[in-house]
Length: 412
Ligand SMILES: Cc1cc2nc3c(=O)[nH]c(=O)nc-3n(C[C@H](O)[C@H](O)[C@H](O)COP(=O)(O)OP(=O)(O)OC[C@H]3O[C@@H](n4cnc5c(N)ncnc54)[C@H](O)[C@@H]3O)c2cc1C
Image (cartoon, rainbow, N blue to C red; front, side):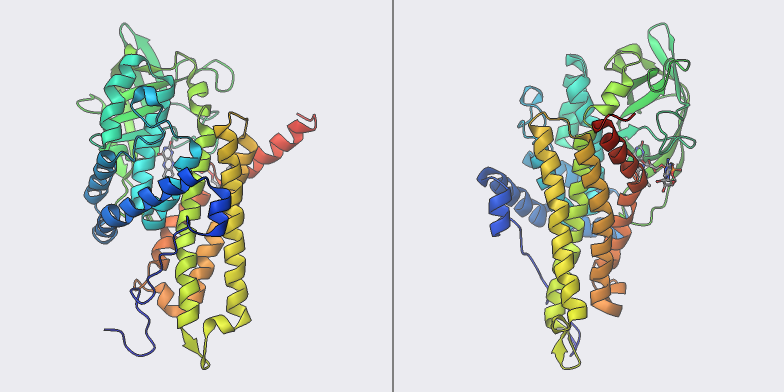
């Protein structure tokens, strides 16, 4: 029961949406706005209750069910190429889905994004017909879960240069040995795309190959640890060991010593997809703060009547839209087949850093109640934080952007 002076989350129910606003009609096509409405309605009705269950219980099971539901609804396959059973949408649609999903649940977005996008897309783009036929349908349906294994205990930001995981050829098999760390979905994954050195003496990145690994009955495969994470409750993130694991040579993905091409191809799309999560999560935080500032009375007035608060809201809105614009520009460039590494990297670090600021300031506007679990602001902070670290930290992305800038004016 709401007490006087207490505003419950239900009182603050904000569902602004995005597709009916003048800027969305300007920035997105009618078809893209329709796609947003479809995905948004489905996520709010069918996924939100499962996301709450995962947050409260900390279990992966509701998340798995969410991915199966998205599979049945066709959301998982939306931007797979038509020839593998998808709808052939591009990166713009990927950002729309990412934004709407993270606006509700970062945990579901992360598990689904890792399985459907990060595992599935390299297979869709580089797999043999047999690999596509075998691995993609169960991933798109959400019946099986995928993972991507790049990072190692000694190879984080320098994942390519520091890689030690080895794959040696033995007859009809490759034999994997080494460790992978921080692997999302690691201990629950049915399939993985894993990168390993097939030629350790080759120059930087040239001796890496990609493999599809099936974890079921894989002798020598060990889960060393499932990490307890700061946020995104329910997500499984693991430290894995591979001790002389035999996998069929037919599971090589994209050719021997061609792994770097598999890794880099699609990276811009992944970074832009990741950026949509920052837009979605910080948008939810901003919407709650906007409404709260109108309802909460102090000094006999609503908070929004104080410039210290209302100017913050104006700034939050402007940063959010700047994040969206950088993201959308990069997405449209990739969809048009243009090189967009600089734009994708800039969009990601700008959105990671500014989205974090928005979530933090939103909590500030709620004051003490923002720090409690009455509102999801404290969850957004926990869920958001890793965005500045994973899939290219904000520091590394700044490095990449300046490198491209200098290349453009003729410096090495
Ligand atoms: C929740 C979570 C999920 C993840 N999921 C996956 C996954 O599914 N698959 C996978 O392969 N990996 C995954 N990762 C790994 C992630 O991509 C790495 O954490 C990230 O690349 C950074 O590596 P690191 O943690 O080893 O940090 P380090 O590389 O040790 O860096 C530590 C700090 O130093 C900074 N730094 C490093 N080098 C430089 C430099 N040259 N200049 C300036 N600053 C620098 C970094 O920005 C960072 O702030 C995940 C990580 C987390 C936390």
